[in-house]
Image (cartoon, rainbow, N blue to C red; front, top):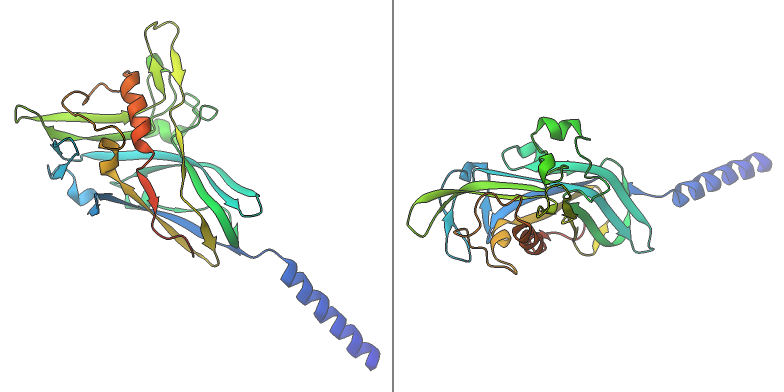
Length: 254
């Protein structure tokens, strides 16, 4: 009897140790919300000239889409969890605003939650993604091919008081001074969203301040740069600068 009891206790102890040693994980999601200087922006706000840029132009939003890729969590011990995936976020499609990460994340403290805005050059392969092709997300070959990072379209009131279109489209910057030998510059960028702690299933809320595209550090003048911005390398580099402050994390722990 004592042998049986001892064996039972040993099995229970080993099972408990195995459970304790097994890494605990959580199901994590990212939710993107959009604001204009603190005021919520949804698709219901489309086509209303109601937003004012730092430069003083008033504008409407007709379309807002952008791509993120390479979501990465960096654990405090230095290990990284990277999802080799991409997501097209479309303000007119609420389902696209919530991303459930495709693998469970180990519970613990992380020094950063990062993702890439757009595609890095290694992934920005012309015609490689059927769903993005269907979504008309491609960049013409005369501009280097690959895919958009951002499509932000609407109307604004110009200096003459007339309503005019703008197409704030961000792509890999291209110098077309010699159309036969394009000079391309990767203007995707990594967004680093601070230290986070994961203790359970839940979601991180990421706020997207659309006004930042027009203000920081470069004060955007829609009267000068409004349409045909994709082949404008200087404009693309300014977009790259302004995009650095667009995203912020609302909660740092689950």
